[in-house]
Image (cartoon, rainbow, N blue to C red):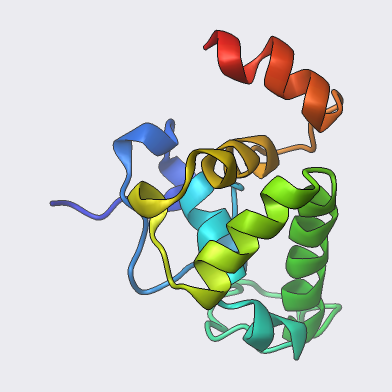
Length: 137
């Protein structure tokens, strides 16, 4: 199977994620990237983004350290997860503690994952989104 660059990805449904991880510049908040962020939360929390080749070819010196990117991505994910309440806690536990993959998630954990994915945060609160959007798809 051909590995696609996340920057060119049009639909997460056509992807199985990257086993080797993601660069900061690749983050598009697809479900697989969200799971990867959860899996690597402890490293990201300490500011350790394992890949440092985000600025390959850039002429300017980065204005912020790589640790800022790691912490900001994790913070964004945690903000999104907080909106999902206990379903988000289930997602966190199943991925971070139990090591579950996408297809092994419980229905409520998957529901939380579908809420936190996406380029921007959802404007609709979680419970309303579940009632009006998620269960109608």
